[in-house]
Length: 239
Ligand SMILES: Nc1ncnc2c1ncn2[C@@H]1O[C@H](COP(=O)(O)OP(=O)(O)OP(=O)(O)O)[C@@H](O)[C@H]1O
Ligand SMILES: [Mg+2]
Image 1: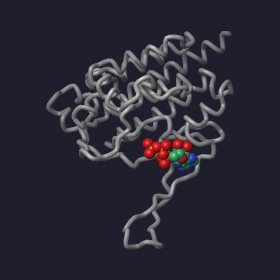
Image 2: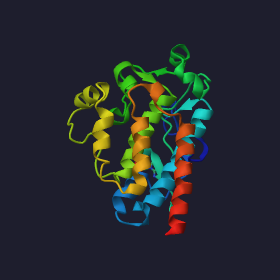
Image 3: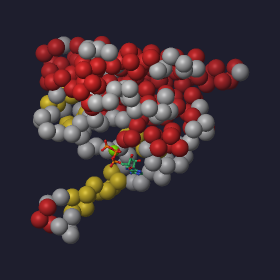
Image 4: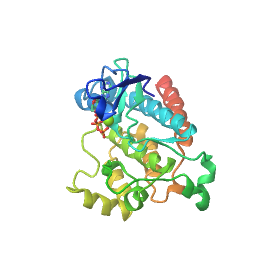
């Protein structure tokens, strides 16, 4: 998580009653900037992608464990330092939600209570959003998991395209995602990944399930990525 340093009031325009959130500057910028600007660098290697994905998965799992949903997970909101450490940032859309253990999400009655309903006017990152967020303004830990899946997809494709690039309008994206074609469409562009990253493609597939209850929790995602890292190191050691 990006360290929070403090809050500063707007002394120039006190009538606006606005304040600024002071955060650390991450020198290398967002993971999107880094992936686009350093093609074929060390950062592009599968082992580093796996590490970075584990880092921001852990940040999101930490938020969920503290009953906060982020609601704007995307490669532009994952920052990277020069030493390559990734952190989750940009909490402008995040909200506190009712405490709810992850395993209770399968209960449809309790599940409703983990949602955060958004107003009609609010600007939202449509191309990263889960079907239930798009069609009924519902957000939960599981809608964050969908966004995490889209972000992992971005890392795996080195941010070469925006999600659903061939769809020109937000309306087309909404129809595609809400009719269950969003996941398959993104997964199609992962068909040429190196064999060592196939398990991450499967993870993206699980995160992009239409039914929220079919998606893993962030804690489960972290566990899986950690086990892939261990397997990767054994594989490298044997080579
Ligand atoms: N703490 C920071 N350190 C370094 N770069 C940052 C920091 N915060 C943001 N940035 C850079 O500034 C850019 C703009 O950030 P901003 O959050 O305003 O818009 P965005 O991430 O492109 O869109 P969104 O409003 O959906 O988050 C980011 O993409 C990132 O590259
Ligand atoms: Mg941002």
